[in-house]
Image 1 (cartoon, rainbow, N blue to C red):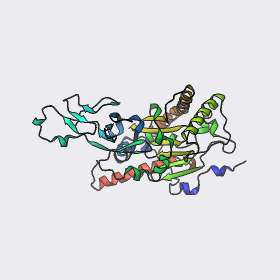
Image 2 (cartoon, rainbow, N blue to C red):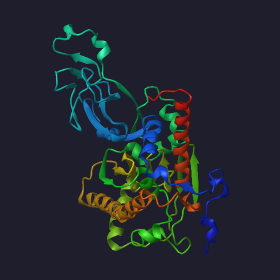
Image 3 (tube, rainbow, N blue to C red):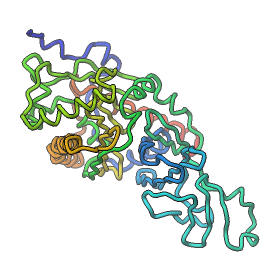
Image 4 (tube, rainbow, N blue to C red):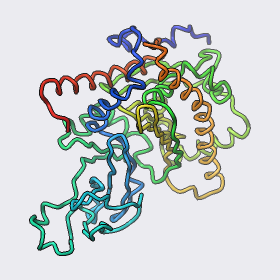
Length: 400
């Protein structure tokens, strides 16, 4: 069947209101703009920092370093099974409480002066505490708002978040809960650092306009005569979040090795009951820095966390249900991660080259076409929050 090329263009209602004007380049490299992003966004919105499968039992904990907020966060699962989050800071003199990244313990003792805290954040004991001028109840660890959706752990560094996690995610809550990640028990992970602004990095994974130029080999199965460049079928917007319905070629071409791996993953999907699950061909871009591919065979998640105005850290995760308890299942999972790394390896140099060009100041604007509408949406969402924050400061507000 020959499908007109116009079938793979965004619907007018998808892009209405986002405009067509060039986008200023300063927000992609300027230090002053990055400082505003830190305060207006990363210290005030919900951020995904992990999954419940990392702390499945009471006493389990993990620590996340968030350079963008100059914060270290301790996440615990208490005896009651509740997940809690705290600033990894002893309330005596501010020393980071633990240097471990993960583990299992019922209490945490500061190495500086021996103050000990329970996993629920309460101060259990402190040497010579009777000599202090404060009550133990006033020395609990500083809490951080934490909540879970689809097994994903989110935190909010705002002392008084303006929205609950459910309000922030809105209509995406139900759709995320239907994804296999909600039942995940383990994951494969690939962490990288890149010399590029977080938005420059994230934008690369929000559009498929570049696939035929950067990924001619690895994107082959996504193309077909009906849609040779694998353009999305539709763009979707959910407040600050965005996404698209991606094209699934009717007769993809796979190598024999790919067929073996895909066949085993297909068996796993059928066993898990997700073969006909909703959202199987959806890309979700959760504001500000997480994107998800709603595929039953490969539960793909990629977050891009800012380190500085021109450097970022990415975490790519493939979530799995159950252990890789056979050679064929282990092979399928390893092949999936190798494939993800192969695709990403093709992106790194071009992303960094783009950042170098932007940072040179040679351009005042960049241009987004209709296939890059998600990039435009991210820019407008970020800038609206930055401008609102600046207005609140001009009106006499205080940074939190």
